[in-house]
Image (cartoon, rainbow, N blue to C red; front, side):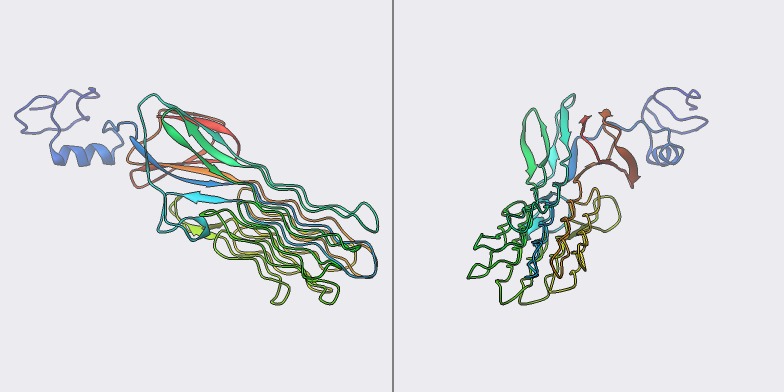
Length: 337
């Protein structure tokens, strides 16, 4: 029999010997899928990547003692896609959805870099903001903002990095022992590296989603982020910001971590937007100090499995990968199934 052109139940110009009206044979399905005419239902489940905003890098101290801040910690990373989640934990489960439910997507901003207020009392970087997916029947999926890098400071003021999704690196201090890197959050990110005391002018790198930030006794680099292929391509997210040695900034970690500032009064490099990378520490040398780099904003990616969503707000970018539809939110919005 021949189906009607453009009918709801049949593709255009297809002749078949199917016995039952309105039933697609396998060959008809393939023809219709190739022409974009086969009816595809709304996805019943999705995978996700949720990355919080990265922490800002710490400021240096404007004195000749060459004390510099720590690198900002990366935003926390949670994912259901791939073999591992952030912080070395197991991947989380795919989300089964209920038709008609709207899920709210929040994308966290990066934290501001620390700044110098005088010869002492310099500021830690500010923690990044959380990212999340929430909705009826779903336990909210929240990634924690990255920890700010510790300040470079004297006067026996503690220069520890802030805790966060990944921890900020410790700054250089006159305290003994060395200043600690901030703690990361379980299954989201790692701790920042330790900073040095007066006898060791190196600061710690910010923690990343895949490894600890380097300490002052190593090379002060930010911890690398995690490579996730949820978009169809392998991309690194959530790298820690670089700390620094006496007169040179260290590299940020893979996944958008900003480099530490190099010389006299140089600012730290900001983390890359929509990666959750931590900001680099401020550069300093011979009595002046810069501002720590801001943390990179976060991102939320939802991969609708075997079909599209029914609708979105917030203007996510939409791409297809096989039969899946990938929605990338660089700002807050919502998605309905």
